[in-house]
Image (cartoon, rainbow, N blue to C red; front, side, top):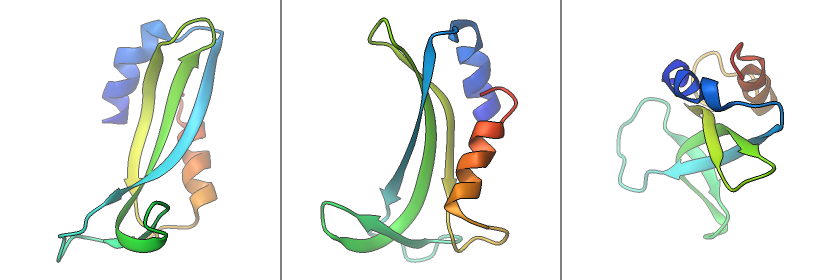
Length: 98
């Protein structure tokens, strides 16, 4: 999916693009059994809830109001092979197209 996102944005990426890294979550309140479902912090509720983390990289042109989605990945600290949130960020930045 990230390859498709990057292919669509490739022609619109310019030298003045600022990359914004955003970590958010998807809340899955009704999930009973999903692979690697974990606990994520919900700042509005001030508690942990069932869900997944989402790491997104967005390109923003400093001269206009447009932004480009460049990378998006769901992850769980309970998944096999998960090392750290920092590694998730470095993986996104190291993507050859970002």
